[in-house]
Image (tube, rainbow, N blue to C red; front, side, top):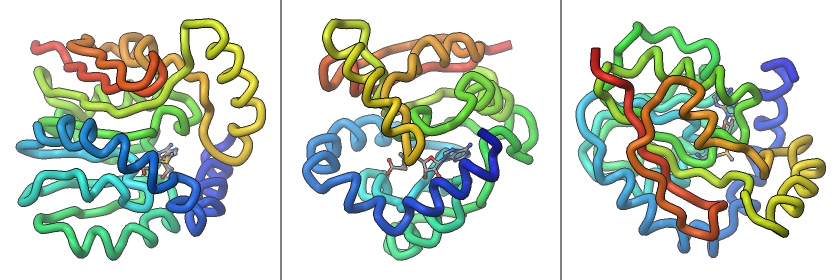
Length: 204
Ligand SMILES: C[S@@+](CC[C@H](N)C(=O)[O-])C[C@H]1O[C@@H](n2cnc3c(N)ncnc32)[C@H](O)[C@@H]1O
């Protein structure tokens, strides 16, 4: 799928995204996201801010560069960005074409993104390029499962969900490794499907 198509897909979803994400799920994942994002420090990139649902789980007072491919998602995020007690600068950019200098960020965060980025290993390689050596990648993601019957269920669901939104069967931990990161920790939150992944770029 061309990137213009990805952008159009998420622009279409933007007005309905908060409803689709569901209050229950957001409340359930909130403590895990808070814990993950509590490490934010230094020059921070947040990939795929979406409608800004994650902002409520950011620690206050940080200076964050947040990107997303969809201008309409970022438009929806505006009130949450304005309410954040710190600085969030947004740019509408495709992760595959980020203009940042190599080794620019101390840390990169993202949430429920690598189910959606069309070429995940390439997208992760792009993150690796802009992260400082020794810098951390902190992800909250849902992925495919290794176990029966979930693996088959998530593969089947992806046939339906991928056209309109995310894929449900991504092998994100393998993809992080394939992009050159070193995995520090994978913390399964729900089965082996919802998880946090902490990785880093090897120091030179
Ligand atoms: C499932 S939503 C998650 C949004 C937000 N992180 C959250 O959890 O509420 C996926 C997001 O990824 C963004 N996205 C998809 N492909 C992208 C790309 N290639 N570059 C940057 N953002 C992308 C979409 O626009 C969308 O906002």
